Length: 185
Image (cartoon, rainbow, N blue to C red):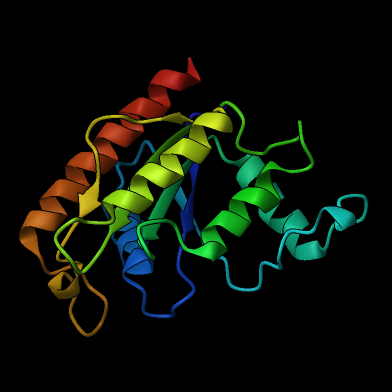
């Protein structure tokens, strides 16, 4: 693995001004020099269809290649109806198929969920973790990252302005970097 491990940061929302994308960008700014973050949005990722496994669309190939090249994976997601958004589930399906060729297999990973409400995407976080266990992603267990009250965390330019969240994300990304380094050995 590379001396500066790379992490594919998969954003589970398509919205241009999504809180998940803003969180991913904030994490990139806070990441220690020992960790490189590559933010991956899912705009344009076509729906998984097993009929296309033999000749996958170019967008699947690109997504799979970006994740495959990464040393780790970090999911940043909102919660929709107590679960992950369909676009994120689709990305997991695209990356994990055909069976036995998952680009996620054995990678250290993490999950950050958020919500304007107080639960911080708890349901999405845990549903995603269930899928990641099956995909053999080694998910960071502590600190857990359920970010509630996300609505006032960013200014109109998308800059993180909530000090307590900045401190938490700083601690989280450092713990994640240590987790990734631990699994490089």
